[in-house]
Image 1 (tube, one colour):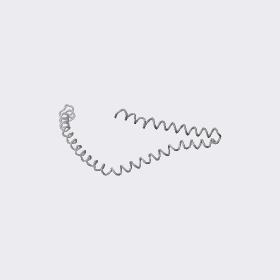
Image 2 (cartoon, helix red, strand yellow):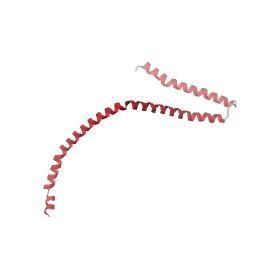
Image 3 (cartoon, rainbow, N blue to C red):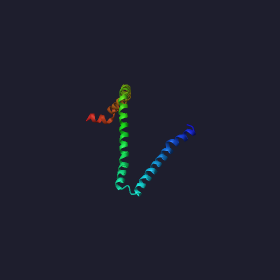
Image 4 (cartoon, rainbow, N blue to C red):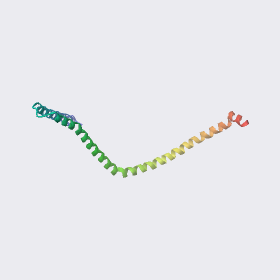
Amino acid sequence: MNKNKHQNQIVWQIYLPMILIILVLVVSSSLLFRELTYGEMDFRTWSDISILVITLPLILSFIFTFILLSIAIYFVSRIKPKINNGLLKIKSILTIISHWINKLTSWITQPVIRIESLISQLSPKNKGKHQE
């Protein structure tokens, strides 16, 4: 990415939204304070404004979350058959691998078990127990 393109992105994605938000806050606060100083606004209006400030982000976040959840459910329902086929292939491959691992471990452990069994039969402890 070249430097001019990066600078352009910084302006459009960082500085412009920040300037717009500051302008909206300045204009709205000046309008509110002007109404308050001329006595045309009372404290009930402030309570209404505070309720809007609190509930509006909650409502918008709920709507945004609902839309994202709906999109996710739609795409999962569309992808599910493809995922099932892929998972069945993976399951069959893993079953074959598991079978070969079981055979390999059995092949490795059988001589060890036989040697330990032979050693325990030939050890002096077992001879003493059998003589009693």
